[in-house]
Image (cartoon, rainbow, N blue to C red):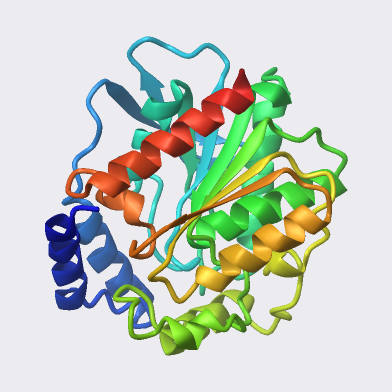
Length: 296
């Protein structure tokens, strides 16, 4: 581990107050400005489009990947973030996996609470299938809220009778909107990105009165039987650490082939810092290689 690189990242996180639980428009502007600082991988062409009626951004590799596609669901606690703003992260995964990519701008809270994000993600996945892409040529990925959303979307797709994709990747997933994991308190002194009070405010905005135990809101409570192979990447310095551990345990107990990949000392969604941190590049490369193996 490069302690010097990690110290720089930690310093940035200490000095950055994104105000995620503040006024939504202000939080969104601040978040987009922060993400604009992250460089985007060369060799990718991004284009705004739509998928299943949902605004989206596509990424095409210079070599072209045929019909093999990564469907990406961005993070941001269901309140902030965008497909365009997150292209630095999902562009790394697209390049590492050697596929084309599409990320959607699912509807966000509080304007469009649960289950709007799940409905949009499902519509996008259904559209990929209806476009003629075989399910085995599609992989699904997401980070933080998008990681939980990716799993929830797969549950909804299975319930809707859709064929499962080749694999799914969840990076630092927020899988329990009840915020009941022990790490919420135990890791509070280590996590410089998230806080329990802030998460609970954002969960309340997204749920808008719905039950946090609903399996499509908190897939930690879902029946995961029949889901495709799942890779969960999580850093040890996250208050959402137990979301990953419990999600992996539940998936494994229900017969899903699951890999839990714990990265010591890493913060929430650390692959976002691939331009600054060796472990971030390594994690993105490892995830891309894993997705590539599932497609092959």
